[in-house]
Length: 443
Image (cartoon, rainbow, N blue to C red; front, top):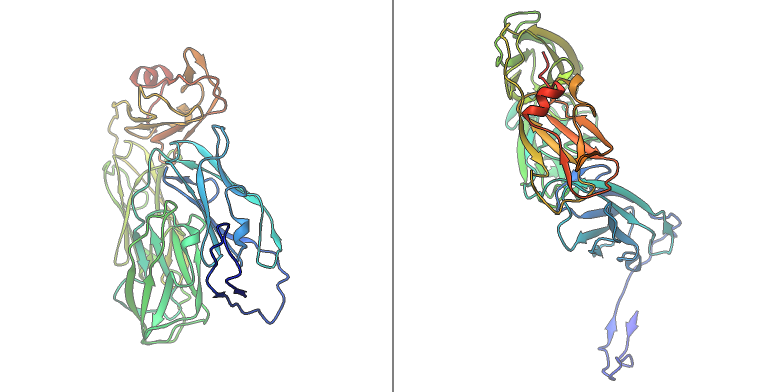
């Protein structure tokens, strides 16, 4: 295509002689374009600095992406959120960037009404919603675990290469070069998959097994979270076993502390489980889960050698049955599951739970009418005492229709209003309400 100086602007200024070139494919394009990835994911909770990003199956017409077709709406109403829609230079992705921070604790929905490829085929419009947290997300994702471990030797030739991160990864930031396995500098053929919770990356090689007695390099780079914070690159190595035999044997639990069925266990005793071979820790298997009365207890899980350790964030309830659920995989992906239990020492717990934080903050103003209220407590609450009869959201003296839910560890309660007739809300909480409503810890 050429442009000659006979082309001028309205003032008569001639354009420079310009030539553009492109090459056609050998076959016609008959397939409509599709959206293959989007961020934030459906129903996710993201920072107030989040932006919407889409990845397409093929190049999209630059005329198809603009603020008339690609827009963002708040559940508060008021028309589209001020944002800038842009198509990437390669035509394979589009980004919708809000011009101002999003409102905290608010539901948003994005929609792409229509789009087409370079051949004029129309794609199907789509939409999704997400929620904002209390503020911007400025922390970059970091590596939580990698398997096989850096420097490990004797790795089975059918080992699964897995990296788990500390937070959700933006699916649109994962490309064929983001997560790679190299041998002697050359990429090993394979594909990368992201777990359902978008925290674990797994490299699936095209061949059944790796080469014996060979050093491989794991590389991770260019990934980001749903707010666009880019994670630090990773480069680790491992060496395979001299044996070409595949590992098809499940890991076996050889010891557990406290022992299964033991009694009089201290209220802060860590749980340690040891296996007959190295295991991996990632978000695709639960590792170690500890619960009481149906409430999952919060704590940190760490790995050392063939052992996993659960360290509780607080004390177990006294004179209670503590249940341990173990689900682990070895380096080759062979899974094992176990259920164990112990009973804590019979010490009386006379400390009442208290509210340690509330969002929106007490006395705050100009909050969204649809904002959810989040209460955090000093200790797990009895799930049988958490309901709409014990916790109320009020507008003056009028009770609002709202749902009440608790976190898995029993320490966080969320109140979500169904409707918001007014803006001046107050939530009934504190020691007096706890005593009157019968809130108490499990056990």
